[in-house]
Amino acid sequence: MQILALRIDDDLLEVHHNMLNNKDTIFLNGEEVHVKRRYFGTTHKFSALATDGFTTNHFRVRVGMGMNGLTFEVTKNEVCYLATSSRKISMPQRRRRPAAAPRAARHQERRTVSRSTESPLDDEDLLV
Image (cartoon, rainbow, N blue to C red; front, top):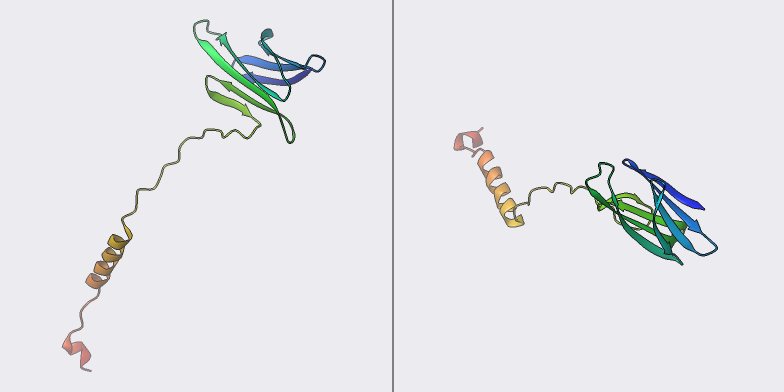
């Protein structure tokens, strides 16, 4: 029984599960590339020649049981294409704000700015 079909770039990855003998079979572009017995979860690792005929693609397919049924994780050359488990998906790093000055320096800076902006009162201003 087919439980997953996923198009990855120019490849079609299919995962089939036979409940009688409890085996997962992985097909890539219609060819059987990996077979493994599964009870609660398993990881399939295999390599295949790319469509250009020169490079090799490395695949990892994890099939497991989760709280809501089957969970999948499909990676090709360490890039995650499908993750339904609790795997943390790598995201581009956010830019961090520059480090702030120490608190004492900021407080001192505020005090000097506030003193310099105040205009001193002259004696003439006090006489009304």
